[in-house]
Length: 383
Image (cartoon, rainbow, N blue to C red; front, side, top):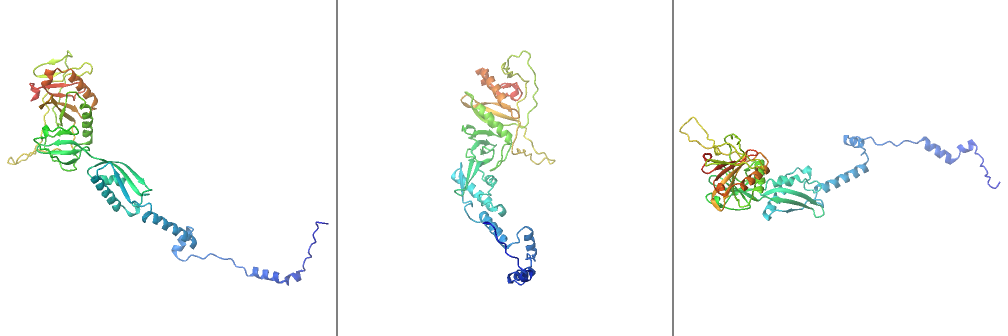
């Protein structure tokens, strides 16, 4: 057949065993030995073998990767922080903040790699800002990898309060911390007018020093909200703010007729739209300065100092009467309540107060909810 194949005749077994090629293979099979991996001798080699790093080439590859990571993290390269750009501050403030940021980086743990922008923690900037007294807040921290620059957006503090004690005047930042002693003399403080600053007066002894917090946060926030609503009053200008620590208890007495009582002693008005009613005659709120007592009668009594940061349950706002800066009256607000409703009541009360009665105002007490108490100059409550 065309596709038929002729079979080779089989070799005789005796002849095959005598063939040189066959005998060579047979000899190779007889002498074959398996290759065994070298048994690790040292403890380190045993541990590397357990984690799959027994081969030298594997160890070299992993070592190369580790060295590359260490170089990227700890050695100067494209990810190393080089520049710090600060916006929102003056040149001197930015310089001080940058210095503090670099100090924070230098003092950080080496294992945190804060010099590397990839691992840099923005909270270091906030910690540095706390050491610069003129920096208010840190708005945003941005990492610019392309320029190896840390971009910091900050807000500066500004002078907002002109605080007068019994003998000195201080400039106080908007966060309530003391900047420094003001250039204004205490005798001239009363006549100073600065629309960008709130004048505050303390009656009790108080010692202020740089960077010291003057007001509690809640009291400061209340004054700011109160001032924002009072500055819009027409023909009425704020003279300064004050506080009282302890007040005599107010006893409430309702009028029967719901009208207006006009007397030589005191004035109380009810405002129909707002329901502002009267209060009983009460003494003028007075500051009670605590004094230290001792068993020795010869020792002089020393007035106690106010505890700082200062807090008060009420705020007294002193207003000028017209253009005469020597004549004022005060309005007492409860600092523990929302400010909006008492201010609206106060505005409504002023709109219904006759000019001659306004000239006789000594103080207006707005602490009682839905009521207002007027004390006139010739009234016993003035005492």
